[in-house]
Length: 493
Image (cartoon, rainbow, N blue to C red; front, side, top):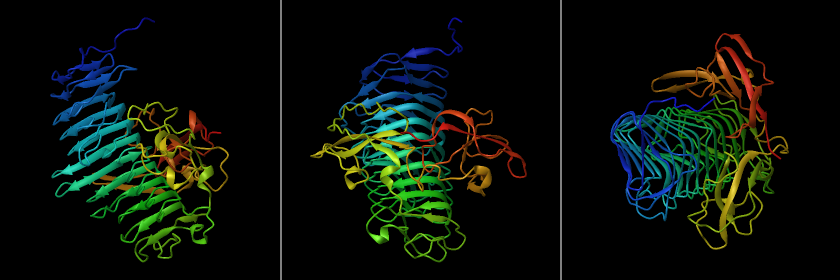
């Protein structure tokens, strides 16, 4: 049939001078690639900014490229980069706003200032970030979330890739402001100069699920900070080959199905923190000639912490996790491409073959993965370059490993996570399918179709969605009817 417009919103073109988006209900559109000399600001509620397919914005101005300040119901889809990385601007700046969606968006080279980040978020609520790349901030964070005297809460980061920045995702409270009720799902934080994910002054009642942190120069996931985080749930985390610890857990939280290997310090680094519960599987250790590296590599305070003070990650108190050790990380992922290029700020940061890839540091004559030389950002240091890392799991990986590490969701204990607004009980090893009519939160909470997630980390297979080999639930007293599906291919050659 002939193409027809399904909307009546006015369309306004955005050119090199930027624009004030000041008419509610309007779609502001960049129809052609352009070097901008001005900012794009949302000055009323209910506006949209999009770049047309194949279109990119570039700039070297000092102002934030896109700014939303105290406005709600905003939609952003964009592809943009800073030309030379100078100045102190963020790519996207959102403050004191709500119900903002940033989707299908790609940012590179925005310098931020201090630790401000390419995406800078202050005192917001109910924001969604989905299918994004934030690449190559040489000095500060990819994403920075502040609570500056007021709470930042109910932000959801889904299918976000943050790589080759000074640090990955940074949460920072500022009393009385609290970071709380965050969701981080199906996301990858790799090859940042410092940490992958970190919380300073605490993060509360937040859920991390199907996340990978790898090759960062510092810790993989740090929930400790200057004030211990609490009330958090971490599920299906992979944290490998980081220059610090794999996980720094905070306290009074639950950690379910964890995959670690080849982190520089301990896989779980918990010299403080009590009231934690570990459950499911905990992969720790590495195929090393050093005997103490072949079993679990954890530091914990022992009594009351959920983990024994034996250096081997053994359960303590209510924890019931199973430690699996001495497997070889080198045959788990497709890993580095093996053809690093010299660092250039104009590198095609978004030209990646699949949604599990990102750029990072490697020697120009690369060593076998994993190695210390694969950690941190590529930045032009002599004898180093930028390589593509592919975090899909290979179908030839021996067992035990991260692929097919988890059992069918209907056969596992339920999980209850408490946000400050209420508690939710859901199934392990599953994710609500986005196309069902009830899609709200990502957890499989019953009476719906759910994707069985057999792997640790972000990659759960590829291709189409098919019926799962897992038995469906029918009239379950907690979850009612659940139809389990799965990806039709799990693993790559």
